[in-house]
Image 1: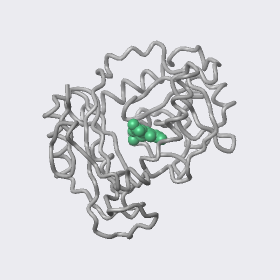
Image 2: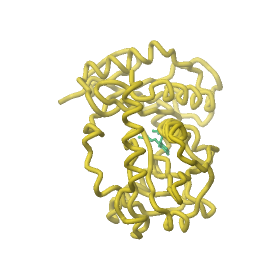
Image 3: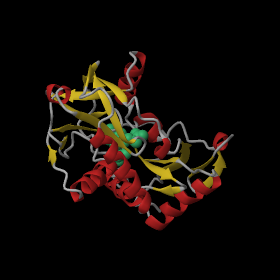
Image 4: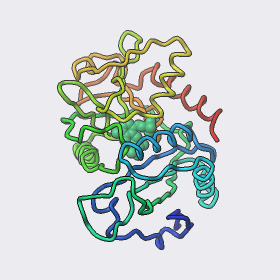
Amino acid sequence: MSRTVYINGSYLPEEDAKVSIFDRGFLMADAIYEVTAVIDGKMIEFDGHLERMRRSLRELDIAYDPNKEEMLAIHRELIARNHLVHGGVYIQITRGNPGDRDFLYAEGESIPPTIVLFTQERPDPRHSKLDKGWAVMTMEDLRWKRRDIKTVQLLYPSIAKTTAKRLGFDDTWMIEDGTITEGTSNNAYIIKDGVIITRHLSNDILHGITRASLLKYAQSRQMKIEERPFTLDEALAAEEAFVTSASTYVMPVVSIDGQDIGTGKPGEHTLALRQMYIEESVKVAI
Ligand code: PDD
């Protein structure tokens, strides 16, 4: 069935929503995006995603400051119109359509941004079968150096994810200068001697909204956390591994490059963290 999507102030059937071929999002990947999870028709971490969206826009000097009430209303309207129960809302904001192709863009100038939103359904994460977890492979991280900005330049992560699928894996962990940066669209973690280890925040990785809350919840339960880079060898010797994102929540990683992590099954800390994250975030969903 056709979804209702949002484009520049209008709610339209998806087949009627059109963007110009001169839009800089299309020609230059000059656009940012967010994905907000929905459980029971309510949004998880709406404020966090909005704040990161504002930051991405600022970092790219896109002259648009989203209004919280307006954004909340659009997200809610799309959830309602599409009867979305579990899944996510995708929003993309581009620098707009200057009317021609040009490498130059006018900084802070007032061509209107292009704003599109649509919903995607996914199963209820509380009933997901996780007994297999994810088998990940590794590839060199060949993305640009501002991975902290959530841009739509997703070609390399798409190639990495497709390569993984083609070779029988579920995802790819990317490696730079000997350490793991992150997964194709998720943050990466290992657990060693009961300590959660995940790369510290910098321009090397996206500052995951799920990551921030998960670490906060874990800390409040006295779990130890080390935010630092870790190597592939460390990961292979870990007791558990997992990834986080708005689409996977907390997903166990059971093997890397064909080598089992721990028992080769989803780890008990990982499963407890997943349950804790989903329970806590559903409590404060809006
Ligand atoms: N991806 N790292 C990368 C490179 C990502 O693309 C994502 C999110 C994350 C996790 O961020 P968060 O916890 O805020 O979702 C980390 C989204 C889900 C996507 O591209 O669909």
